[in-house]
Length: 457
Image (cartoon, rainbow, N blue to C red):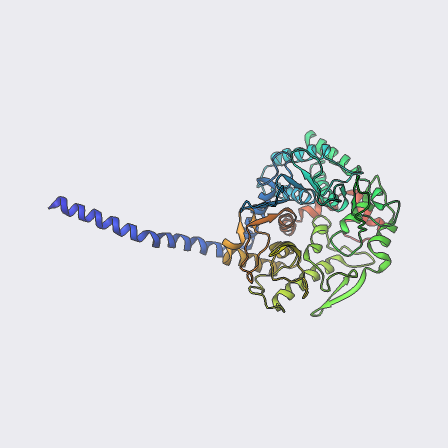
């Protein structure tokens, strides 16, 4: 009888604990979820920055250490679209690595080794009058055509890359011998960019592309206003090209035609180009050039850039809150329209009736943190706490989603992840602004173009 009683007791206990497991598991998950809701802003930002930084660290291309064009967690890639380096995205990645060192995600020594790997690859990679192409093959260091006629130099991507490399130069230039050597090698890469070649025969405008096979056939002079201000600042700053100020005034600013006022809900933008979307365009315009170029107090005869950037971000936010097209999920906790993946391919989402496609791109709000800290934090908290499984993955927030279309791809793009990590770091410490604006030639270039900034003594 004692044996039978013992067996019955054991059976009862087994059944009880088995039935209790789901409840216990649910309790543990509930506690974890509650904990995420009580994270401080500082802790949550650190989590987002660290996980996004990993795109450029753990996710880097193995041979070069540079940024992959894209990472698809679902492992579904376009044909022949792996082992492809994004040169502009690598510039953002260089800045993210410096942020990683600053936040102690990695050591300074590990960061130095990665930069030596990147610079060694760039020294042997294809260049076209000093400019790298949009894409490079990680295995060969040769150009991977971005399009049939886009198989040569891409001056815009080169400047986005150089923005990050110059930050690295400044970070390591006063270090030990190994670090000083790296800084000197970066300086040589910088000096080799022939901005005057990209004036297409001495015109007072910079051209985006040149191909050894197709020449200037793409025919894309870069006029403002868009994401390309950094192009003209670096051209004026180059110690070897010394491009004249007329290139900026006639090419970028089009002799003042850049000043076209547009308004939305009481907010005014003063920089506009004919044919641009009416309410500020995609939000990456307020990010790419300003990852290193500090917009605080930055003014010239055309605009006050802190006001312009923060107003563009505010209009983007207000549009999503008003939600004139009545898309599902838009609001104060879920906003941000910029170029990203879209339900049908890729699109430059913007706050207007034509370009708002019901797709939210987290990078738009996250990278606007310095401009709209409250509104950006609200979006970060909502996506992390309330939509975590749909919006959050191995390298931070996924590139884009649409609640209207029930579309939640588990995919990342270098040019969208990079600004998130960099702008979070700029918000927390100002690191990348300090480094880039400390470049003496950048200060000289800005001064030559007639800019005011607290960085110019």
